[in-house]
Length: 109
Length: 114
Image (cartoon, rainbow over all chains, first blue to last red; front, side):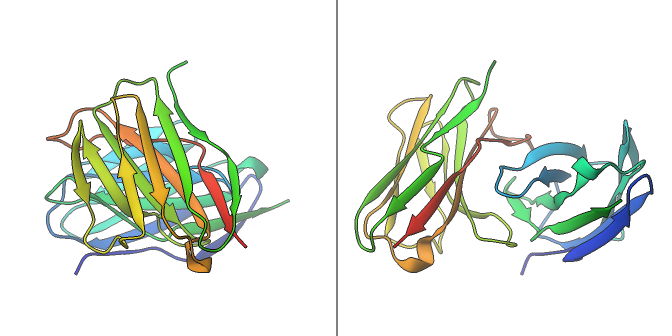
């Protein structure tokens, strides 16, 4: 079967750095997405990785290792507004998105 | 601004009373999706369209149906809502298929079943 694993919840301090991990087992791989979802709102696109390595976009970076079936989202200089769920999703061999359940990130002052 | 719009944002219905949720987009995307998302769970794909080509996920209950009368609009019909159908319903769009494309989501409709 197809599976995406990410931690259920993480807590971090304002101004700090946090890394949210995602491991996947899918039938084929056509890229990995990270989405941010605030409570009661729709997911918004953060990043897309299809090649190995680190993609940096401002305070957010995303890393991919296809051989390990592993990705992480790195958030720097955490702000209170970063409190949200972070969803990892993989595009499989049919270009269908397989979604993780999300990691709820709690930021404390 | 180009966007995905969902109406209503909040919908309350009675157990067993049909309800229709709507989605419209100004992005001119060929592909549209309907997801169901329950609290702290992954979005669950119900249907998707490549243009008017309808694709029903194997485990989508028969109680759920969808219509796409044109490129811009898509509807989700729940024929006889049960308490287990209370959820956030998300509409998303993406550009033409055949490769991996970012999905753009509407704000969602939160459905409550009484």
